[in-house]
Amino acid sequence: MDKFVITGGTALAGEISASGSKNSALPALAAALLTEEPVALHRIPRVRDIRTMQRLLVDIGSKVEVEGDRVRLETPRVMCPEAPYELVKTMRASSLVLGPLVARCGRARVSLPGGCAIGARPINLHIFGLEQLGARINQAHGYIEAEAPEGLRGAVVHFDRITVTGTEDLMMAAVLAKGETVLRNAAREPEVADLADLLVKMGAKIDGAGSSTIRIQGVERLRGTEHTIIPDRIEAGTFLVAGAITGGDLTVTGCNPDHVGALVSKLQQTGADVTQPDATSVRVRGGGRLRSVDMTTEEYPGFATDLQAQYMALMTQVEGIAIIVETIFENRFMHAQELARMGANIRLDGKQAIVAGPRALTGAGVIASDLRASASLVLAALVARGETVIDRVYHIDRGYERIEAKLARVGAKIRRVE
Ligand code: EPU
Image (cartoon, rainbow, N blue to C red; front, side, top):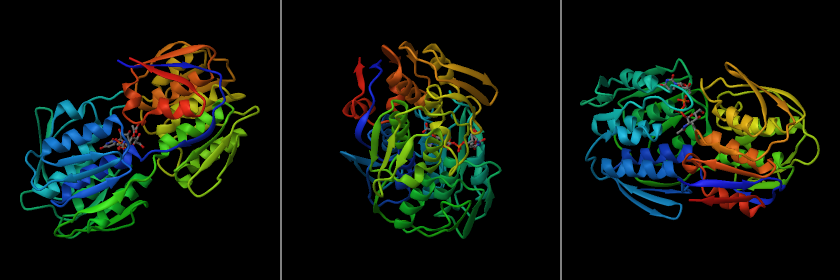
């Protein structure tokens, strides 16, 4: 198992580029199941979750060709409309094939995901939505079986809780349903809007993606197309925190500044200097004493839960007490204990973490527990005195493309050891 060895203490400086969004690329790959024609996707990040999704699509019957960050998919026929437990347990986003498979071939069998490091994460709302569209659902042997032999029918689906992949799954189911579907209390994340852009290029009729009400008029069939995935706002945000925490001068290029607005606002409140040199870059300068700022995670456009762990690492280094409230997942503070091993002063109280800073961190052996938790440990290690060894970096490889190479290029002392 690979480890990262990081020696802290350098201020990061220069330009660092954002890759394509993992959480946009995953539903985009699944959307290719909706047509027998070829779909070419550009700016697909080379990360492990993407490879897992590609494996799943090959098992289902897609031909998948990868060339650099371009992926071409073609599914003339669905051979096996199933997402097996072996894949779903390693990546919950596998459940994104549920909607497209029922829409394309009238049936799907998808393993229930089971527990997860950051919370229970059920898929009951995906299932509820499909039922509203007329699918018959049967649960047995740890699998959900959905059937709609006569095809799906448009309906109103009100999500009683906002779900990102649930909104995406239902949007993909509804594009081929008969009549109109209205998704209410839909997720407004940029990844949902990006998926809608792709589906519209394929011939779907969708209005309102990016707002909380999405209207979809079902069409008979979809066609092939080409699409470029949006930049990864969580990766970009992680790099912005890296610039601020190391007191550096870092410009994140190839990103969408609007998508990191909530983080930029917090960074500005801490006293970091954040500017936008051009339409696709954000520059952060973190020199000088930064102050603590409380933060509560929210759905987009609020502060992303996927940046909470990284923000916590930053709060260990600033002056004052910060209260961080996690509202999206019930168990997303696993990094707090590891940060504490490095010297951070963090108290957990239910949904809240109380972080008192600044504390001098020292390098230690730590364990990555999930994707974003690992990113927060990398950030802490960049400012810790001495050497930090992060174990189980396969978690970080799920969602960050060559993070060690990108960080090393802007001055970080980081290397991967096998
Ligand atoms: N929820 C339910 N029932 C459902 C679906 C969700 O109760 O049927 C609950 C969840 O348990 C959670 C909340 O609703 O408490 C929000 O979950 P959501 O469904 O929005 O999360 P997700 O779609 O499974 C996506 C991202 C996550 C990101 C969350 C929140 C992808 C592939 N994953 O997950 O990304 O944290 O939205 O923004 O898009 C990551 O990249 O590290 C990651 C975990």
